[in-house]
Image 1 (spheres, one colour):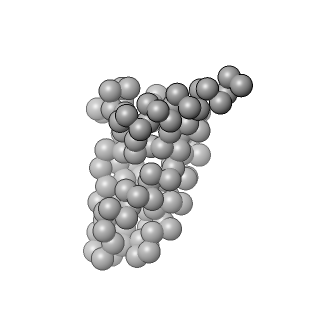
Image 2: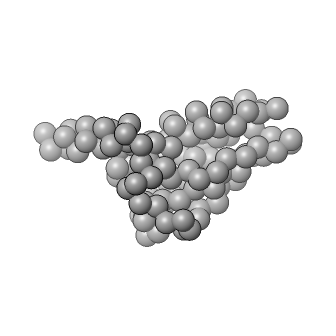
Amino acid sequence: MVKEDAIWAALEEVDDPEVGANIVDLGLVYHVSVSEDGTAEIEMTLTIPECPLADEIVGQVKEAVASVPGVHEAKVELVWEPRWTPANMNDQAREEIKAHRASMQQ
């Protein structure tokens, strides 16, 4: 049986390329579940509904989750309620964003 912690760990490896922080620290992932047959379901959002990189991010999520041993299928549902706000981010994401912005300015 796949543990949800393994899915969360895999999701921490997926960065939002525009923001420079991973999607878990950004608070974009709302729910993770794994069925007995190894199907992982991820409910998540994006920073904005019009995100031009939505397909890329969803693809990376599916790839990361599918790499977890025991996962046979990864399903991603994008949701828009509750709406994402910067208050969803943890302190790690704030630090990663600062570092990302500083590197972009050099």
